[in-house]
Length: 374
Ligand SMILES: C[S@@+](CC[C@H](N)C(=O)[O-])C[C@H]1O[C@@H](n2cnc3c(N)ncnc32)[C@H](O)[C@@H]1O
Image (cartoon, rainbow, N blue to C red; front, top):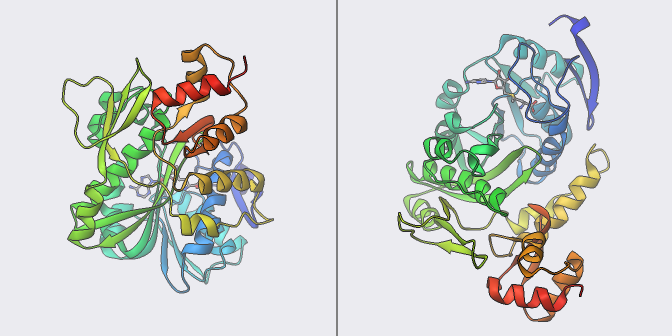
C-alpha cells in the first residue's frame, strides 16, 4: 500500500500505519485493504494484560492472522515478557505493512514476520502462545492450533460468528461446531461455552486437555484463552465437563445436564460446563495506565474476578421483572439481598443486568418479589 493510503495512529504504547478507511466499529469485512478495527482495541488491551502475566522470557508466541501486526506488535512491545513473536498473514500487503510497523516501533530484532497459510505454519513448529483472530469463525484453524501449542501453552481464539453461536442460525452452528445453539436471555453464555466445548473436543482428539484461562463476550465477538495440557487423562477430564444447557421457558429454570433427549426443545450443546476463567490469572491482571481502554479493562477485570466461582447460566433482571410483573430493585440491592439469604450471587460480564446465582428459579423469583420495588 502506498503511504498516501495509510494513516499513522497509536494504540497503547505502539505506533501503527493502518489503511486510511479503517473499520471503527463492528466485525468489519474482508476487503481489499489490510484489516484494522479500532473497536478491537479492548480485546488487544486484554491480550497485553494477559501476555504480561502468562508469557515467559524466550518463549515462542505466534500472532497467526496478524493483518497490520497490531496485536502481536503490541504484545511484543507492551507485555515486557521477553517472548519472541512471529507475526503471520498470508496476504502480501498485510505482510508488507506488519514489517513496516515492526520497523516503526524498532521491533525488528524481537519480531519475525511470515507470509504463509497459517495451517502450514502451525504444522511446522510449536508455540507457547498462538493467537487466532479470523474473519468470522475460527474453526478452520483450531485443530492445527491445538496440536501446535506446547504443553502448558495458551491458544487464544476470537469468534465473530455470534449469530450462529448465539442461536439465530442454529443449523449453521451445528454444521460448524457440531453443537446446537439456543436463543435465550443467556445466549451469549451458551455461545461462549459452545466455542470452548468445541476447542475441548478438538484438543481431546489429540490426547490433550484444556483449562480456560480467560474467556469472555464483548461487543460483536467471543474470545477464549485456553491452556493446553498433555495426556489422555487430562483429555478425558475435559470431556467430563462437556454437557448441555437446558432451560424451561415456563418456569425460567435453567442448568447443565450430562445428557438431553432428542425430544427436548430448549437446550444448547454440547458445550463446556466448567469454569470460564482461572482465578489465579484473573487476579494478576493489571489494567495499566497506558491502555487506551483502561477503564473498561478495570470494570471487566472486576466482573471476571467476581464470576470466577459463580455458577453457570445467568438470569437477567429484566426477565425476572417481566415474569413477576414487579419493578426490579437496583442490581446491587438484589445481589446483597440474595447474599443475605445465604445464596451465592454475583454480577456477570455477559450482561449489565445479569445475575449468577446457585438459587433455583422459583426461589430466585420469590426473593426477587420480596426485594423488588413495590
Ligand atoms: C480479522 S483479520 C486479523 C486482524 C488482526 N488480528 C488485528 O488485530 O487487527 C484476519 C486476517 O487473517 C488473514 N488470513 C485469512 N486466512 C488466512 C490463512 N489461512 N493464513 C494466514 N492468514 C490468513 C487475512 O489476510 C486477514 O488479514
